[in-house]
Image (cartoon, rainbow, N blue to C red; front, side):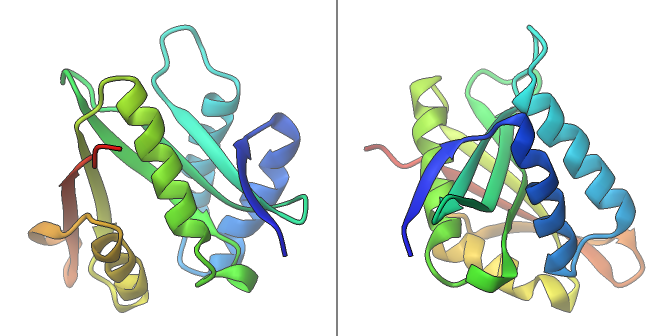
Length: 161
């Protein structure tokens, strides 16, 4: 199977939504917000800082990532959403997407990435992935989302080439 990182297009949006739903971790409301950001990144307004990339596996969208500059900062960015098709997870696509995001951030003068996620058990693989690609959990806010669901913040410097 051939995997490539590519520019996202309007026709990729249904595949992105399908991937989000099939991961089994996002609520309908989260999918709706994720799709709003993906749509804005694919069709950017003049002042948007949202960026998007997809992976294609044998020509089909197999993953995606959305990031953007953190408001009121000079060189900090947020990774907003990321998902890889459950059928091809653990094949390096998530790492490919993160590395593409880092490359694009460096090109815009980026230095720091912030990633937010949940402490729920179904997000353990996600948290482990972020640690593995260089973004350790640096802060945990207890009961942030609701009782027993902490906010996990992962921060890291964007690696130089």
